[in-house]
Length: 83
Image (cartoon, rainbow, N blue to C red; front, side, top):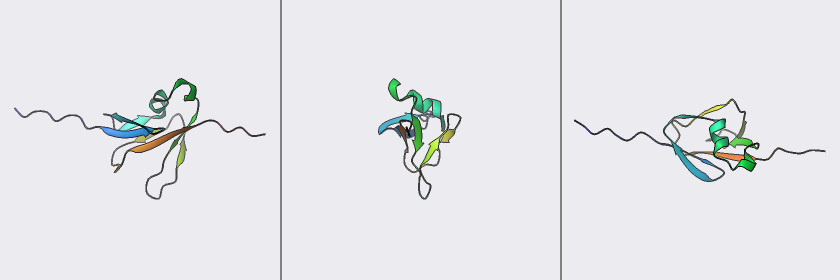
């Protein structure tokens, strides 16, 4: 009987720290859970690939990690204060 191949890993990073998951789609909630407690209320930005611009993510967004040539990069940023 052939040996089962290990599950595929999908790589990504949050604020420069690398992570991997076996699920091809992640949520903003999962990204927030990777942040230190003091940053969990910050905005989350995904770095664009190719000609895509960087973009802010909403809490309900889901991000596919499939078909990526390099790990997706996510960054946290504190809320801007004006005035």
